[in-house]
Amino acid sequence: MADARGAAREEAILRAVLDLIAEVGYDQMTMDAIAARARASKATIYRRWPGKAELVVAAVRGRAGAAAVTPPDTGELRTDLLAVLGRMRDGLLAQDAALILGLMVAMHRDPALADAVRARFVHDKHAMFGAAIAQAIARGDLPAGLDAALFMEISSSMLFSRLFVAGEPLDDAFVRRLVDDVLLPLLHHRTSAT
Image: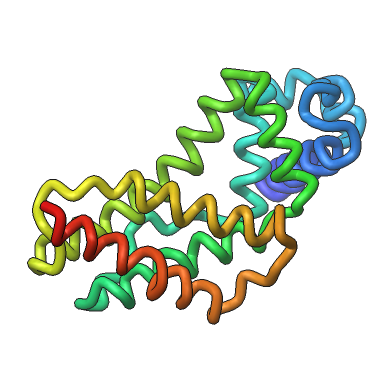
């Protein structure tokens, strides 16, 4: 019974965080407001999360679900990239636009939040994308030493821009175009340039 109550309390706290970020933004959100909205004490919150940044990361991560860092190894670079970008796209679609944009602004002003978000989300995406590139290198599809970071940035930027800036759908057709018309040609260009 106590575990069920604890889980319900945690869910209420994390929901309050998400609601408040969407309503007032990260900067204006206070631990007092979170506690009041969740009907929890600040002591309860601080027992589980050391600060506001960690609490926000937990709330966003809870909404997005657990990230799968290991990409499937389909045996082909193209299908591996489609799988990785599909997961990245699904993660973005699971988020509220106001929440994501609010976090982006807050990360610019709050180094602790930026570090926490990068450590939990950006690192996972880089690891998954990097693993797909490493698999392709191991199969001989790409040369050893190829840096996956640039290709990860291109992918993330295009998905983010398409959804939040252009307001266009992130459907399977777009993900295929991103892989076939942008990533694979760039990867193959890098391969031929080395």
